Image 1 (cartoon, rainbow, N blue to C red):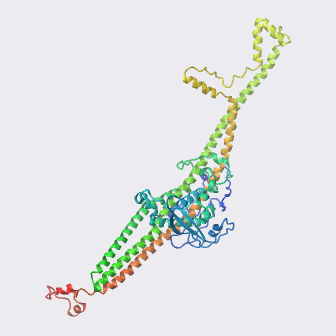
Image 2 (image 1 turned 90 degrees about the vertical axis):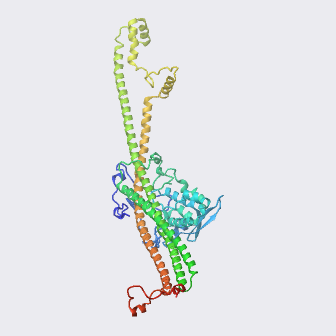
Image 3 (image 1 turned 45 degrees about the vertical axis):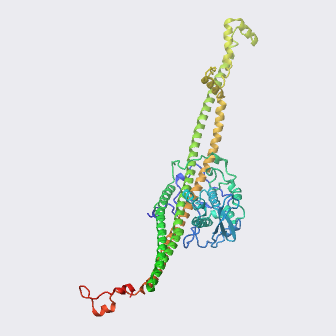
Length: 604
């Protein structure tokens, strides 16, 4: 495997936040602490103050660490389980049994008995799956440990109804579910979640927990909720204005730290899920075949010893026992490799997928910020266009008013100078009617004094609908669009300003969420890197220890067989060593001593 440490982006020293991680035009303040969670996240960007776990002993590590927990300063415990988890002692959650039951169900299922201190709870596999799913929604910026995978379709096809009763599968799930619970119990943040405490307490059913806060307050779309507390009932309505981008949407200004994290995670996942798991499965299969072959071979040798007698029979029997010991030690080696190497390897392959989803969530939050910025700029441009049109309309209206104010005094001055125009309007109108030329002049004066009536909402005359469908449709559309352009323009300006105000709030919230997600994810990636290094060390030591024990047991068994084999007398056709020493080596050429064939037959 290539060395990962040289290019590890999950370094303990954080580089400064790039310009892509925050918006320089938006005032970003730290998010408020969660209202429904008992833990307060004290953030000093760009990292959380998470202390590295203490050194641990022996894999499998039941969680993030198996050594005693450091003394905790927490005093506001929400329940007894919370106090037990943070007591500072070496607490461990144990799955003591897996029982078959059909309680509250029409078909039987396997329930796992969980013991945490003096509390006992019973949950089926689907409860563990639901717990992890809801923890992922409650804490979208943290690495939630994985649970064992479901049975594959091929397993159900081969074993059918007995797939759920597979003893090896149930034992494997017990171990991995126990590791899952202990990893959560040792997480510095998730261990404070009351939903997890109620899961361990077992006083109420899991269905009741699902239908009570905070799980019942979870939004349908996590992207449109606060990153620090998705269940906040007082969340700003501006979150609804945020877009819902795809994980594959490109970024214009990416954060190099998280690009490096994605590259490293993909490389790590390809090594684990590719050659390492493939070769490990092949090695485990060959060890299993070897143990089976040695078991059959030992039985054959033990049966063969019954046909002999004396020292030969004892030696053959002891050899068969040594072969049986090799079979048993190989089986034990196989179990150790499965528990301490294969299962953790698969778990870290799942961790790689989880980190990919975590980085995808942060990517979507970053895309949200850029899309909100684009929408805000677009709305501002639209508002500028509408305001420009409004200014042009007002300028035109003012020009018309000025023309009207100049025409009124001119008409008023020309009316008394007419010799035929009386003082009264009625007389002037009568005289106008009596005189032909004067009538046309007087008919035009009101038009010059008063503005003509407004042509209506649409200055373009609508055509009379014809008999055709197209004409009727055109007439209907024009009727629907026949609105006052001035009021429509002003209404558009008002709505655009409201949208801009909402987008500004959404942009502030998006930048705030991105800042929080970036710092929290980076801090948890650092914690995960420390956990990974310690676990990989323990896995390697465990593999070396298992092989050493396997070699030690085989050596002891074969030393015992060697002692029995040494008791068999030398071959009768071989010259005794003392005779060779006195007479010297035999002369060259054919031997003149006749062989006693009965000696070989009778074993003398």
